[in-house]
Image (cartoon, rainbow, N blue to C red):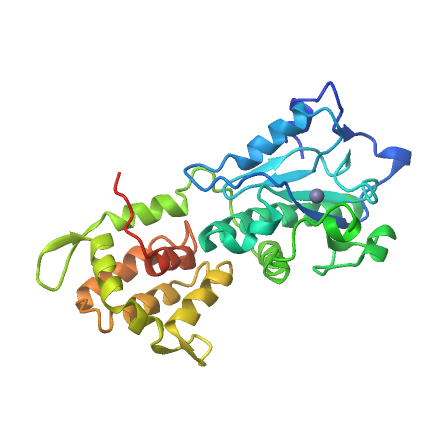
Length: 327
Ligand SMILES: [Zn+2]
């Protein structure tokens, strides 16, 4: 795309070139997409600079090793054009595209759910864009399914983990990488791309703003939303968590299962303010919120669903078990 910039081209590594153009032997992308983790520490505090840090490292390292795209929870770094060769997977470099998550493979299960949702979404966005470009420029249709090593070596289009291509030396993106969820999110991005959101508030910022908002409790005293929810959470968390609730699909769930399910399927819930409303309503049963308070809470969430998924907010509100520090 005209005017597009690539970190690896803007900051060429003079000691160990990290991009090849053209690809060796006139190679072209085949639609094989290799997923990696960059094995850096996740940046869980404030703005996430992990992807930028990885990109900088690639421009300074003294050995070959690079990717086409690097993502963290709030950014996508385009390192090299898809037509270029990068050094991310020794057996398939010549035809594959490398996309790397700036986290550690063995820690997926330990990262906060909202963080995982955000970084997967960034990965899905850049992957969907790559799929569109592969179609537009090279006429390749990439199926949203995993392929095995034999297929990857045969240049088949599809998705494979780095470790599967090179099992004696690599294990990324790790056994806990949520493949099905990631591919679902890529599908959602292809169907309905999310806009660039660099200037938009992060989940943390929205949660914090909501957390600090004044609200009247049942006694008529003005407290913050955070204080109200914290008190309620402490009082009735377990009871609320196991309360049965009818899902939007008409089936019976517990509220806990619903919240966990929403966190897993945040992308699908992106515009579904009804979920946030239902959570607020259900959470309020036995929590002594007035109708007006429920409506206000639900509206606060609903008003923001264009900026962030309702699930992120709901997860922040409901799952949080320790008080947020107010700035
Ligand atoms: Zn890798």
